[in-house]
Amino acid sequence: MDEELRSLMDRVRGEARDGADAGTDAGADGSAAYERLFATEDLDELALVLTEAERPLWARETAAFRLGCAGDRRAFETLVLLLNHRDPERCVTAAYALARLGDPRTARAAAALATNPLRTAYALHPVRLLTELRAPETVPALITTLRGLLAPGNPHWRVALACVEGLGKLRDARARPVLEAALGHPRLTAAASAALSRLA
Image (cartoon, rainbow, N blue to C red; front, side):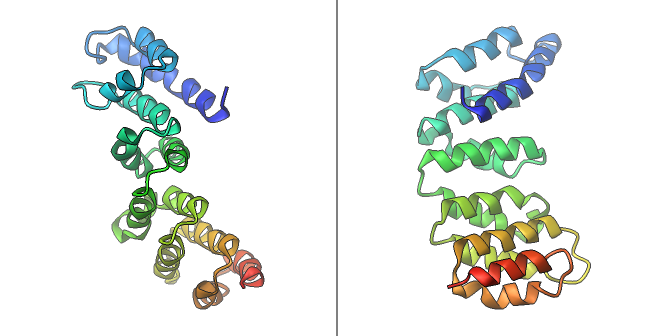
């Protein structure tokens, strides 16, 4: 079994059980719904979960993850919403599925999330996804995001570090000015130096 799928199963099992106790799974037993969502191979059944009323978040996440990993683009909108969720574990799951979805809209959506200054606190996983995708939008988005995080006292240094590391992996010379600027930030110095050494 895929490690990310196993991790998702372990994480949402408790949510499914608690939802059943609270009666929030549209009258169905949460444990039975949980088993069904992970057992079915019917993509139409999974897609229906994304649009049915009163489905709990864990069920929508599970359906979107399985559809995304199967390359079914009906999962796209749900996965993008989860990529920007306040719960980091849901962001990880969404990024994993989006990377395997093969939808040409993914990089554009991830770039929009990463560069939105109002959502910087949740930009870590969009930045990492962009790096993995290596799309035309990736380098400009990482440069823009990093540039906005280099102000003194900015609290989102982990997002900045992800940008620096991503730009180092991509080895694009357009990143040189912003990476040189990052050298002056103690938490970024080592990564920026390493990234600069890799530039073409």
